[in-house]
Amino acid sequence: MSKRLSLEEYRNGILEGNRAVLSRAITLVESSLESDAELASQLVQEILPSTGNSKRIGITGVPGVGKSTFIESFGKLLLEKGHKVAVLAVDPSSQKTKGSILGDKTRMENLAADKRAFIRPSPTGTTLGGVSAKTREAMLLCEAAGFDVILIETVGVGQSETAVKGMVDFFLLLMLAGAGDELQGIKKGIMEMADGLFINKAEGENLLLAKKAKANYSNALHLFPLGENGWSPKVLLGSSIVGTGLEEVWEMISEFEGITVERGFWQGNRENQRLNWLNEYVQDLLGKAFIADTRVKNLMEASKARIKSGELNPIILAKKLTQLFLKS
Image (cartoon, rainbow, N blue to C red; front, top):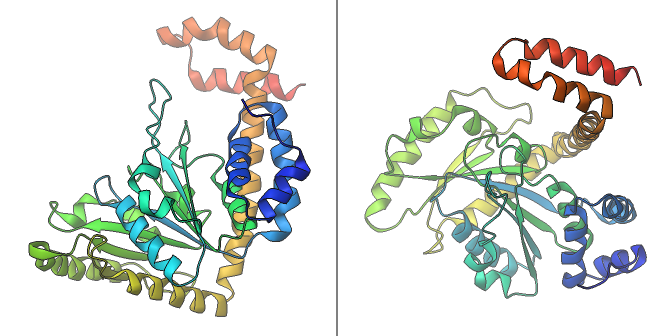
């Protein structure tokens, strides 16, 4: 096992664009060890001045929609345009074994082989919505390493994509045509969060279905009120395999950036995301401290049988536990 690098070695390696050091740094921020967490927080603080210079794009969609294929094709297009692309692909973790497939790097083999790209699969763990708890830190590390487009792929199982929306500039929803009743097959809440829709696999015999789906989705989006950023979400179609529609996606994102920067929303959105990050982390720390408290653990253990039998109201116990914790 390779020894842990020093803070200076991590920082210098990242700022030099060293992908091996970047990979080790992300492993550091993902670690659950307290000693690693302290070093990780210091590292993120050190590299903060070199962050914020990328476009952060969240990409989601139901399993089978072709997210990995889209990201590889889209990523290669961005490389051709002179960008450096980092992909943070969040893999589903088993709730039984806590294991993760981590196969995205294999599915994006061509993109992964390019030195201008960096692909990092991360297990979701127990985080709701398929977003790694440390994705924000990983994103900042990638920015400091010089990657100017960050693509965050989510599991897309419909639990809660709000977490992704809360850390990106643009939220892209991938859709399929001909897979049943499209408008019933996707939750309204996810569509409301999307800044743009891309109907994938619009090739061959599926092209006609894709065009019909585009009309349906466009009509549905018109029913939603215009967002505070002044942007009206667009519906595009194309094929990740054939390579059609990808240029239009980038043009849409660039147009979105232009409008929201002019209105002050782009920067304001990032400022609000930082405050939300603070609030989430405070709640996380408080939750861990609460569960670790000896008195809380003892009372919880002593009351477990009464909760199981239905004799004791969980709400009453929760209030007692909280009051006990706050007395410290």
